[in-house]
Length: 111
Image 1 (cartoon, rainbow, N blue to C red):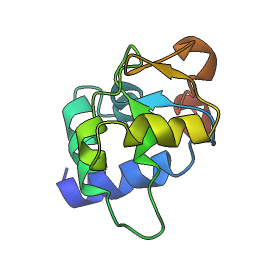
Image 2: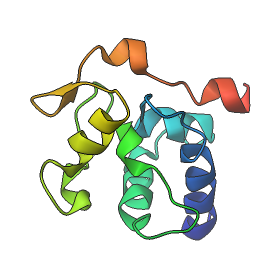
Image 3: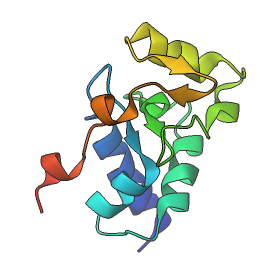
Image 4: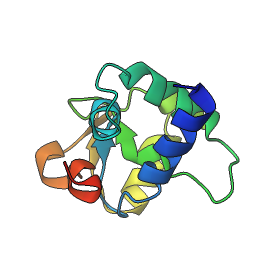
C-alpha cells in the first residue's frame, strides 16, 4: 500500500466525520482495512494541515478520547478549541462523554 494513496483514503473518510463528533485513529485504520495502521493515520493527520478541501483532523483522537495530536495544531489549546466550537466538550485534554460523541467510520463504509 503506497502511503500517499492511504493518506488520501484517510482524508476522504475524515472529511465525512460530522461536526460535533469524533473518531479514533484506530477506528479509521480498521474501516480502511488496515487495522494495524493507527500510527499511519496519525501521520496522515499531521500531514493534512493546509489541504484543500480542508481535513477536520481535530475530530480524530486516540482510542480513549485523548487529544494526542494536539501539538500538530500550532497551539496546545487549538485542538480543544476547535472541538469546543463544534459543541464537543474537552476536559484535561480528553473528550468528555467520548462514547456518546464517537462516530464509527465502519457505518459509512459498511463492513
